[in-house]
Image (cartoon, rainbow, N blue to C red; front, side):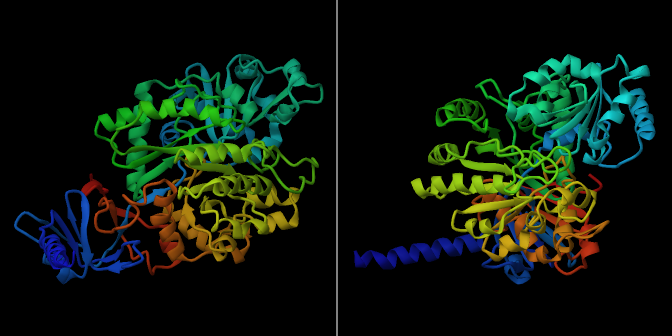
Amino acid sequence: MKRFIPNLLMAAVSFASMEAMAAADLVLFNGKIFTADRAQPKVQALAVQDGKVLQVGSDAQIKALIASGTKVVDLGGKALMPGLIDSHSHAIFGGLEMTSANMEDEVVDLDELEKRLKAWRNDGKARHGDVLGVAGMSSAYWAQAEAFGQKFNVGEWAKVPVVFTGSDHHTAWANNVMLERAGIDAALLKSLPDAEKDTIGKLADGSPNGFLVDAGWDRVASKMPVPSPADMLKAAQSAVRYNNSLGITAWMDPAANAAPGEPVFALKPTENTVGVLPVYKALAESGGMSAHVAALLVANPKSVPADLDTLDKVRQQFQGIPNLTLPGVKIFADGVIEYPAQSAAMIDPYSNSHKQGELLIDPKHFGELVSAIDQRGWLVHIHAIGDRAVRESLNGIAQARKDRQSGVTHSITHLQMVNPKEFARFKPLNVIASMQLLWASADEYTLDMIKPYVSVLAFRYQYPAHSLLKQGATIAGASDWAVSSPNPWNAMAQAISREGPLGVLNADERIDRETMLYAYTLNAARTIGLEKQIGSLSPGKQADFIVLDRDVFSVDNKALHDTQVLQTWFAGREVYAPTL
């Protein structure tokens, strides 16, 4: 054996030399480059070959790879970094909303709202078949459910179905015409099981007042007109362009087997429940998939391990599609926390209702489901808003870790309220915190619709990014678009400042810029199961990168918030520039 060692060493040296001497297709130099590779985080230059990173290093090192056919770009000192990754984005739904009537969380009086509805009806933006719909409604409106009825159940609206959808996509208000279409009346409210009684608002006489949350909203959403395949493809194309313009080259779609009109919160999938997956397939076939999409399939929270066979049949239908992976399952553990919905599962009851919200999973059997998902090598991504939902989600993952050490990275998303006892559990359980830190703001949501109704302890640890980080948790960046803006620069700045229109939301939970840069690169790549392919500018990984208009590593927080992307490259090909 010994005599072969020198030959092996010579072969290794020869291969390394050939690799170093290989000519690059593309060289970018004279830049401030953040690689997100902790072994070599800051460099000057980048070489690309066949759509992958060939080498990073100093200008001198990388210029040595220039040949006659190499495209050479002088960055002129500009900042360059890996393409950004959103670990929770309903991108196609976001694309649909880009061209539809949308209040974008703005609050106006009902007279002005009616005026806008008429304008959107007339220009077609609110028209969805015979239904008039407006998205992006602030939860601040829902305390006015009865006033909505007095405005939109009479006059010219008396025979027209009207639906206002909350920006959280968990809540809505529908007028009587739409409620009737969905079969929602006093008799139904009387017959609802206890678990659903609070999902539909009611008047003093027992009839519905139009307010809907989670399963109640599903009943109406299922009666909404479904966009055409052409409209869905157009929405997907818009979503990709918009994400690329923000520097985003990958995302997790956490509900890809749900389509407009399908009941997300009580989804009982069949092998024909394919949601928006055909849209991604069509987009890829048209050559427009300039982003990686990790598509998750929603499982019913009360699923049993045998139900996973049905999801696997869906997965098998969409294998081999370029830039589309199906790495796992999404599960809703609870709803939302804002008044009056209050369907997030809390440890301490809400002060007004004395209820704890709705825990959608069964704590006694949830661990069996998570373990079965883990055994298949799939990741699980859990929606958990309330502190009890977070605790029970961790308990479920703990069961999987007890059963085996699969190495599969699971994640919990939202994490609005986390009890301090849970902070230290994330690291040993290898659970990533997928957080929408754009929401970590002192505003009407956190101060008016949450603070009066939850315990002091729960409110103190709202979006506890620093507390989780301090205990070793890995944080990944996420937007939940179309719930809120997918702009990662806004979210990074917000995570650092936590400033809002009404002050600062717990300054102790601020986190640093470097953490956020990794949150939207390498950490998010781990969350979506693609860390071996993307997430850093490491040799051999796909050459997804962005060029920026400012030094995001040193500018002040306001300037970071306003960052503009000059170029987005996907697999070594420029897919976005402001002039393209």
